[in-house]
Length: 243
Ligand SMILES: Cc1cc2nc3c(=O)[nH]c(=O)nc-3n(C[C@H](O)[C@H](O)[C@H](O)COP(=O)(O)OP(=O)(O)OC[C@H]3O[C@@H](n4cnc5c(N)ncnc54)[C@H](O)[C@@H]3O)c2cc1C
Image 1 (spheres, rainbow, N blue to C red):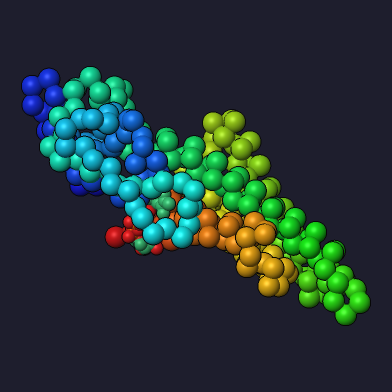
Image 2 (image 1 turned 30 degrees about the vertical axis):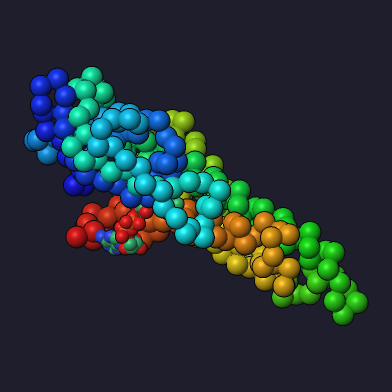
């Protein structure tokens, strides 16, 4: 993390940048995590209109196209000290947000997988080739059966995680596993479902290609697929493979 600030009277002066921020182009406030002069991570609320704060939009995305994405750029932004979040220091602050968001994503990906499965199942029962619905062919049934099996496994993992969360026992590593597994399940379901639909699968008539493209962002944001795997690896072995 290179974004940092230094004290100056009643303000702090913030410098740095963060790419890939959802809603950056029109957000009125930004919650920013940055290092203070001692190198400790603190949270600040930065408001639109503060001098030196800009939010250039990211163009040319082929994923999450309905959501505006941009950068947050801080060039000597004077932020009142009262905008510093009290009572939260270090990684605990950002991690508490990420744990909640990643848990939600674990369920969202299962939703995408279920929609792909449901679309493929309906299509397979309607589309007739060689005088029978394609859902009657073993190869298509294999795709549907494996999709449903993986979806059920992801639901059970997420459900168990939810029970642990309610009990205050879920660990960040368990949340990483669920987020990563959900993305994998959904991407695989989207690929298989798209094939069941043949040529129709690549059109906007059905939701599968939209899911497939959006999942490319989901697999990257809130911790990339690789990084979540490394978190699980660290959890298993106690050895940090990040650096
Ligand atoms: C559409 C979209 C919206 C987003 N919205 C937000 C948002 O609102 N707020 C926010 O904070 N972020 C947001 N993000 C940012 C997202 O969290 C980052 O893109 C993500 O953290 C990856 O960073 P990066 O793109 O710089 O990839 P990089 O860090 O450059 O990684 C590139 C590749 O290298 C791999 N890699 C990196 N380090 C290691 C390592 N140590 N070991 C092995 N492999 C490694 C990664 O896994 C990845 O495959 C969004 C991203 C997207 C695409």
